[in-house]
Length: 169
Image (cartoon, rainbow, N blue to C red):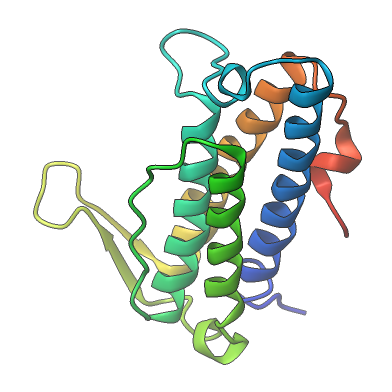
């Protein structure tokens, strides 16, 4: 039995982005309850040379929409990444979920062998098949940033756990 490229991508992105949205709700409530400035969480880093929480969410979104669009061979929406509040991050997650929700299995399934080229014509150019792009590049990157966002909030006292990270399965 085989698994479809669609099943390994869009529903996974949807599950995790919805979970991240719920985690944001808990983070905002935590900041309010503990009288913490939201920026303390939004700008939190695990170490000075790492990207902050807001950027982790933005990059997770970039991988979800980018992988979905590239695998479906549709135009990828461009976002400005100017979010500075929980509400703006929620809006980013919502528009990303809306976009990837428009992609149908038949747009992705069968595209395992398509060529995906990132940063074409530059020294950082990378070439992948559709399957390798999803399984070896996009999903690991996506999970890294979702996990780091989760870890930043947990490290800063937000009462979240594995069920929050996983979301509805």
